[in-house]
Image 1 (cartoon, rainbow, N blue to C red):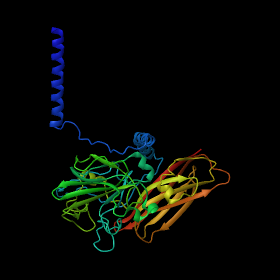
Image 2 (image 1 turned 90 degrees about the vertical axis):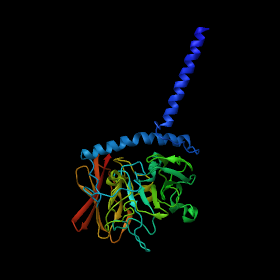
Image 3 (image 1 turned 30 degrees about the vertical axis):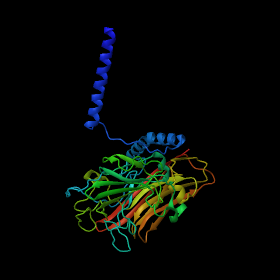
Image 4 (image 1 turned 180 degrees about the vertical axis):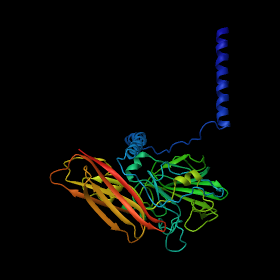
Amino acid sequence: MPLLRLLIIYVVAVVIVASAAIWAIFKFDLLPFQKAASVETPQSAIRQITLKKQETAPRKAQAAAQRQAEGQVPQFSALPAHDITGRSFQISPLPLSLPLDCQPGIDCWVFNFVDADPGKGHADFACGRMSYDNHKGTDIAVSDTGRLFEMIPIRAAAAGTVLGVRDGMEDISIQRIGRAAVKGKECGNGVRIDHGGGWHTQYCHMKRGSVSVKSGDLVRSGDQIGAVGLSGFTEFPHVHMTVEKSGKVVDPFVGLSGGDKCEIGRAPLWRRDVLEKLRYLSAIPYHVGFADQLPKADEIRAGAFNANTLSATSASLVFWAEIAGLRPDDAISIRFFGPDGALLAKKEEKINKHRIRIWRAIGKKSKNGWAPGAYRGEVTILRQTPAGPREARRGARLDVF
């Protein structure tokens, strides 16, 4: 009996200590704040593919960086970029973190900014045309719809309370289903957050089944609220984030205090570390690759031609490129080289109007096959600026066996 009593006392003591520890953890917020997943569960096969891609994506990025460092792939560059070195800004009334889990300028890019033109035209804060009429947010995009399987996290840009959510809309381009199919639901699957003081953010075009919060939930800056999708009024995978103050749209690159024309504002909303990464880039050769035939635009944007190896018996070798943020008089040069450095194909073009996004391709046919080795494609955009000529470029390597 004494032994039994000691055992009972021991168990009770353990339970009391454990309960106290759990109480302290939640009372003093010693664990990261997490939300329950959406009740809509993807099929197991899709979940396995997603998990695999999530595990391998960092390795692919590391390998690509290593190849670039070794000189195997021409360095990527875009133009121009606002240099904020040495600039001081007023304190942001709503410091915003990056709403997309990506590396700006490397695997994600801002394609559209808030429309700064009050009339029927469109303009961005930097006096470019990377926007469209009455566009109320910032679009941060990834390269192609093939990346939807990666479940790239969308995160709350600031702490607040979830006001409303929508989920269940299909991930499909507006070019296929038409505007009428999403009338009244242009945002697609999304989340709206109240940050207090009249500030709100809204996140649109999330992947179906990815919304991981519900109305009334408290979120912190950086908490995952969904994943990149293709729902609603969109034709490419991205997150659209709108910022409002008392019902009025605010450009996070400008803020409430305004600033000099064509420049970042005096009090931008983005945190400085985010602003240094999320620079205004134009032109952007953001997506390049190879194919064994002349591809179609929708095939490229679906990620169908992202392979970096092809057979020596292929009838054709084609190098393609997608470019965003072009301006009138930009000069494009696309070149394709053989393993011996010989120029196999070349295309040059001068742009005559603002273009948010285009794609181009060059290639060559062969009846006798191709010499094994490393082939190289390169796209270059030359722009004349008041500070002199500026150049953007991107290249890719193809191994032929």
